[in-house]
Length: 180
Image 1 (spheres, rainbow, N blue to C red):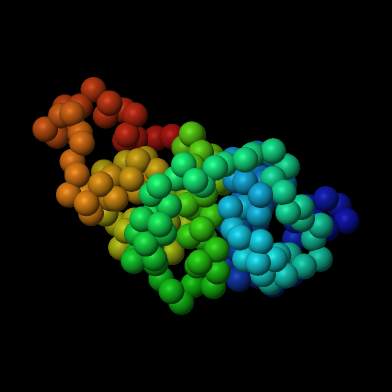
Image 2 (cartoon, rainbow, N blue to C red):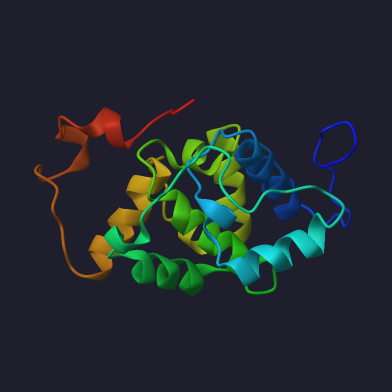
């Protein structure tokens, strides 16, 4: 943290760093569900901080007290593999982004809120930048967390929807449309 309490990165690499700043600022303020180390392992977290925030006083443990339990996340590896399949590997910090997004999937709110982003449009931009082919598949504006899990189900050939098409499903408003 800077002397004035604001997070100021030492090396600017846009736009992933812009989103990481938002995520980290919210996390430091206790405004996300991300667990200790942002959901990264301790070595990844140290690398992230040393790379972009070495002059900031960043806690290792979640200020919110969030203790997300990855042992209940049987789909963690599947989510990581899905995101890796569609990622742009040339983007700095892409593996950090993948692991942070997966940790955010354990939360019970909208993904952008669970990550500590400030709007759904930030999450959409982040996913379009890092996973353009995957993001392009969400052409019906499905809520992102639901969309990611739907992709996992479709990859396994599972179609659990109760209605023959989304447009006639009673849960349509829960899956599609604005979240802000």
